[in-house]
Figure 1 (tube, rainbow, N blue to C red):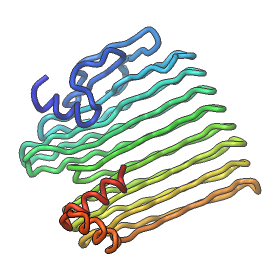
Figure 2 (figure 1 turned 135 degrees about the horizontal axis):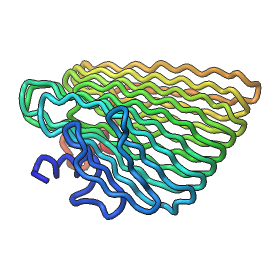
Figure 3 (figure 1 turned 90 degrees about the vertical axis):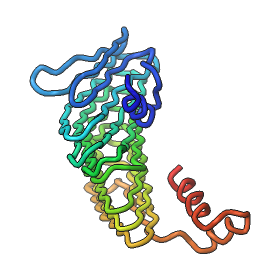
Length: 305
């Protein structure tokens, strides 16, 4: 791996060498390394770009890495990844995409991920997106995620986009069966003229299903963000959607909630809070010796933690 590859993989997947377990690394729209284990198989799709990740039933807490990186400008990558999680399996999936731009050409990664989660399976999915490089071309990342969560399963997603991505349109849709639980935690930061849109759609079809969707974001300069959440309670279920945003400079943030109860025992809540950093917070930290800029940085880092 050259310097750019190592830097991108460290940023998005926190790896500095090839993992000891299962992994598939995608570089510049092509495969760049793979390893399987007795419990996790990775198979190249025959009909379109992408892979199938097959986790056997009863897998005892393994991790699989599937980062995608773009190391140069002018790459337009589209990949389809399907995850088949067996009944009772416990797995952590480290994904993410890093885009490096070194000229005036646009670099783009569109990843379409589908999850088919078996009964009582536990899935933790970690996805980080970053943009890097000195080029003037745009760095664009548009992920789509589809989840079918089986009975009594648990799916947790942590998605982070903190720096360097000029435009992103993030779409996630989930269908929850009986006693399934979905937790999504999103963190986004934009600056300059960057744009970020997030859309969550959840159909809670099973009795006892639960969903928690939380987005925390910071918008600076002239950047803009749009948060859309749609929760449909089609059974006796519990759903919670929350959008918290800090706005700075001439940025704009919009939150559009939609909750629909189609069952008398559906309990659905949406919360949204958008505002600037409180002046007293800045003053308090400045009395401890920080500059105003340092105080702002500390507050933002704590907010996005």
